[in-house]
Image (tube, rainbow, N blue to C red; front, side, top):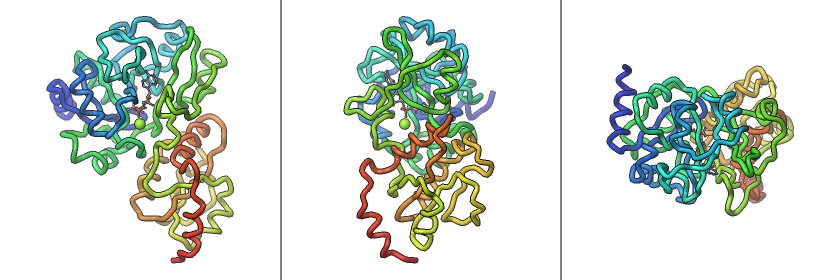
Length: 330
Ligand code: TXA
Ligand code: MG
C-alpha cells in the first residue's frame, strides 16, 4: 500500500480536507457523508454555499447507496463512460448531507479514472465530495504545484498523482423527465455523448441562478485580464512589443519564449486541453498586463476549451485595458 495514499485516507477518515488528483483536475476532497468536513471545503475555497459539489464514488455499483433512482439513459452513460470524466446529476438519498448539494434534492456524481483516486476511494467506506482545488472563480489546478501555490497554506496534505491527463473539468449531465440535459461541457465532448445516447439538449448558458454554477459567466479566470482572439496572427503582430502573454493553438513556428505558450505542437485538442490551464497559470504568474488566447476550432473538445476561455475573459471586456496597453511599450 502506497504510503501517500494511506496518509490521505487517514486524514480523510479524521474529517480533514485533502487535495487529490483526478484525471480532469485536482480536487479538494472530504468525506461526503460528513457535513462538517464538507463545510471546510467551502471555507477553504471561499466558495458560496449555493454552489453544489461533485461526489466521487469508487464504482458504478456504489451508485445505489446514494441515489434514489437512475434514469435508463443515465445507466447507459455510466456504463459507457465510467470510470471517467462524466458527472451525472441524479436524485439523492438522504445519506448525502444538504451542504454537499447546496440544498438541492439532486447530487452530482462521478467515478474518476485516475488510478490514485480510485485506490484512495477503495481505502474508504465513504465517497469523496470534491470541487476543483482552486479558490472560487480562479483557474482549476492540473498539477500539485498549482494546488500548493493557491491553497497549500490552508490544507494539511496534497496527494500527488502527477499532471492531470485530461486537464479540463468533467462534462456534467442532468436529467429532466428522464431525459438528459447537458449542464457543462468538459473533458468528454457533446459528440461523444450523442454517439452513445443520441441527441441531447443543452442548458449551458450563464444564468443568475444556474443549475451548474460552473456556468457562472465569470469563472475559471486568471487574475490577469484575458482576451480571446479569433485572429491570432494579427494580434501577435499588434501586441508583440507589449506586456502581453500569448496562448497559441495554431502551429505558427513561434520561437519559444516566456511570452508565447504553444498548447499543442500537433494541433491536437486533447494535448491543448492537457496544457491550457497550466499555460494560464504560468502567464498569470509572469506579471503580464494582458493574456491573449487563441480561440480553438469549434469542434469536439475545442467547444469545451472555448467555453473555458470565454468564461476566463471578462464578461464585458474592458476596452480601457487595451487603451492603456497601447501606451505601454517594452
Ligand atoms: O472534473 C471535475 O468535475 C472536477 C474533479 C475534481 O472531479 N470537479 C469540479 O468540481 O470541476 P467543481 O465544483 O469545480 O464543479 C462542480 C460543478 C459545479 O458547477 C456545480 O454547480 C455542479 O458541478 N453541480 C454539482 N452538483 C450539482 C447538482 N446537484 N445540480 C446541478 N449542478 C451540480
Ligand atoms: Mg471548479
